[in-house]
Image (cartoon, rainbow over all chains, first blue to last red; front, side):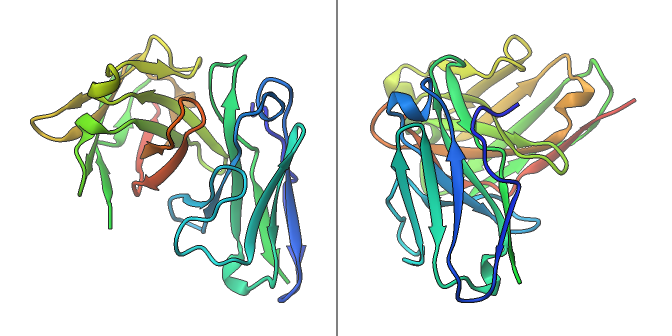
Length: 111
Length: 124
């Protein structure tokens, strides 16, 4: 089971802002390890969305932003669009498990 | 654009073995840190293991569920990454993705890019 907890689903109307939380512990996010975010469109491979807590790779719209505080991190999507419907995963490292860990995943639905 | 192409997936009986391959374009596996990540049907992502570049020692690390059963290696002459899976269990059924570790500090890595994935089904 994953050590990073995300809400199973979030939804919003087009143009709205939604946020996805990623809650960890003192052995992962709270220990200072970076958090990264991925978007997985239906039937496709994951794609890097945010790296190093808040950095966007080239080509990722600035509607996507990330932040980290304490033992949690968040992904915000502003100006929600239909094409944002996907599963989103956070990822970090856990020193107790001695390996990379992913969040439980969040399905974003555009109403 | 960098691409990773996996192959080797299929149906295998419990207790059997299978070897997955991943061939990157535009970079050599010798100089890259790479990982395998899997996704069981309808489930989330799970890191399987990684291999450091040859220049960083070529050492491997594995997640607890696969340690001792799975082995990651590279063949520089074929520029290919492998995942040898032995003693397969039904719970190993998943789409397996190869990906490249990015970032300058160990364990602070993120994964980019990703291959298209290859399905492994373990069933009798």
